[in-house]
Image (tube, rainbow, N blue to C red):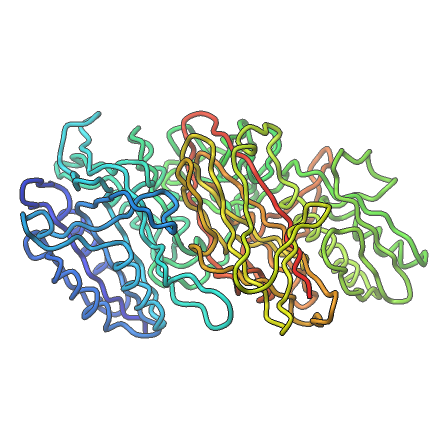
Length: 630
């Protein structure tokens, strides 16, 4: 069975900069861990003067390093952090971060534990097959001042802005070969924020550690990272402090196991502003009135959107009254009436086959027949199906032609509509744009040539990347440039012509004003034809590189879409249409990969970094088309 190796580090007694709640944090975390069912965890604790740099390194290398494939390694750190300016192009915010050990504040003492060093150690353990988790309740400043100072409502500041350091130059994959291991991070706040501590039930505690452990107690042993993060985030935000806990890792992964847990990409939680779903305008939610249904509820329980925000929506329960217990849980919800415009489908071919497809299309709200349906909205996706002689040919999408599909039964017709709905969802992501162009105009994407392959620009604005004469795949560098005058969060989506969408090139982080966020941390992005396409002269494929920027993080799960395949249908269709008609579209999580996406195989991680800002936040998009050709 899985063994958990845990390293708990809590430091209050810093020379010249003491803290109060860190040791309490990690002792409570150890108590929680030992109270779980399963094999007894193997624990090492480092408190105060015992948490020197050498001791922390030994704990990482010797204790957590004993874990093997199928085990879990947990680092829980509560103490000072620091950050300092850097010219490293791989640091998009312009800051380098570090953990501050007990002897790092002593004059002439040991150095801090740098981000690249820590990240390499954790990912080195993960590369051996261990599931690695880091919980970090700290923030960063040049002077590492996480001191206890009077704050609002009795809270104390635990430092100054900090940047999560799970990114290391060695962790990003590239080109051929297996992907390195990666660790999961649960962090107390965003890069530009402070972490706080306050007296809770007579004991000083870190607000994030207390909120996370309270969430884990309420959720039970089968909870996921996404659920735990969503509740901890809401409980920290209730305090009124500007502190947004972050998650980097699989939101559908089981807590301390990482094993996938079937779940909706959306969560309903109770916040200081009422009930909230982590789906907003940036995900394609159009207006108030949309509905979400609680997954697995006893009887149908729905919520209706009353206010759409950038990355979330405020909702009200419909014909049911939430209990106090409901407020302590993050509920998985499924979009049941989103205002996505349906794709318009035209049919032609043998009459009996056309009728078979028409009946299937009528049952999918994401699709509308022309001319039977209402007038198509401007910009609606238009698709065509030619049916007959036991086959259906789908056309009209911007991607590579879909192979003919079998059409001999109602089940086959449902497969055709699944393909149509999948293509429509891909187009919704590709065509997503904010009507307010201000922020979009202040961000751009560049594709730069390397020493491998050629690069040119076509008359229609495409970036053309060519194989080398000896058949090598071209490599480029892709940068996201921020000229907005403020720090922005960004994600770079790779939409392939196989109707896939993945954020694996730049999975979401903040980029400082005037700085560049490099895809794959500046490593080359490999471009190649998909498996099965002959690399003959003139052959080509397309990638749409789309950046979405916002003042706050966005939930990434709805932007993930596997490549269309008859062997692994996406499940993009939905059943009954809501009253009043309109298109429904299921926003799905990560699925099968075709292994062809630019930059190498996708990592398969999502990030729920949701949580509303106070008031509306701006968001924008930029996009380039890259054609890779032989």
